[in-house]
View (tube, rainbow, N blue to C red):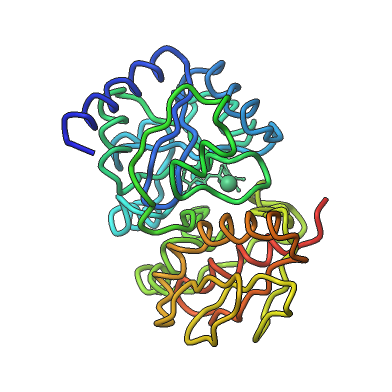
Length: 317
Ligand code: TXA
Ligand code: MG
């Protein structure tokens, strides 16, 4: 796409958002279903379009630290993380400021708000043009596989969104890492695009695990990111009636896609959702019984990849 076309699309997106509409926008992680975060009716439309339970709060996308500080309180630790990893795939869950004009619906009534500065020039230009934060969950029907191309968005939300901006495939491919900062405590709510080790190195201590007794990130329900097909994890090869999602060197198999033949976890993360979408389609068309998935090493981005695969494989509720 030419620069001028993209500028026109950005202006159109900002106009729709200002009018309370919904736009699907590219970010470096996955496509987001965006609305003006300060407009209650627009935020309500996100929940409706996705079929998302209203107790599941949304991430508020900001241009950077200054904009975020208008809506949430930063502890020294939170500020340090924002300075190190923004713009980028890190979401911080922080106490909401009393004078924040972000819709209460966006934080689903919680005393906290999730904020992130995306590392994508289209997303950043739209926020700048609108001059307000953007509430945006992943642009898929609730519970389904996240979109990493405009085609994935169209397949799931075509009639429910005014406009889809084509920013090509997402570079990171898995959603942001979510860290809740409670004073000097940092709790990992969702593994994602920034690996755990990078955050732990920055703060000089281990990330804490959320209290299992309360669901800290309501969206982290066990079954999620789910294709229609059944997944069989840690499979070293596939049965004849299964599709195969490989990782690393693999013997050829019919209906196989490889996350990364070179065993590169970044490449695997970028391919994950697109390959799940594609194999799911093949399973339906060829009436296969499911998708066998090769083991993924749990280090680096492997933690986020394994998290998404485990949820995609979980029994459906
Ligand atoms: O990379 C991403 O994070 C993408 C792009 C579009 O930015 N967005 C995304 O949004 O993944 P979504 O809505 O699919 O996932 C957001 C997660 C949900 O699990 C939600 O429960 C959690 O963030 N969350 C949001 N606000 C929260 C809060 N105040 N406290 C705890 N969890 C929160
Ligand atoms: Mg999602």
